[in-house]
Length: 191
Image (cartoon, rainbow, N blue to C red; front, side, top):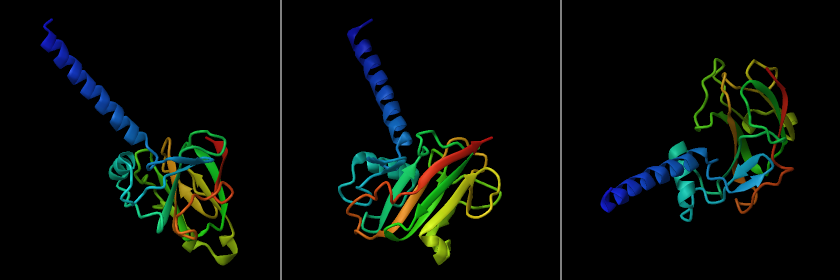
């Protein structure tokens, strides 16, 4: 084989393998995650001019309209507190308290970052829907079948992710929430 043909084949193979690896890395990205806090992942450069190329690619792929950290902090979880991948066939108890932010929301997504269709048309639960008595200690059940109380349906999804958005953080977005401030994710049972 001629040397130019070997170089051409090597160059094409390198571009294909490199491109596939880059796409796989971005698709597997957890909203530009850089910091792990228990099962929750977060990044600190959303919505900033200094956002890394990786963060920008993940935000572009997921369609997330990332606000600067002074306006919102984003935390994603793809595992429970025990490190097991979140599975739509299981029932999870998500418990938390008052977050150091004006308000928050918890949303259910598939691994590609899309809302999962479900018969109940429930995709998110937020602090604005909590009565004052629940604001300091709340529970959300994530499960395939309807649950009493606050419920996020899995819609028959397999693996999934949860995104916690905390709006107008008390520290102006200068730091991450601590593990004790972020919700616990406990798997209770699987079908």
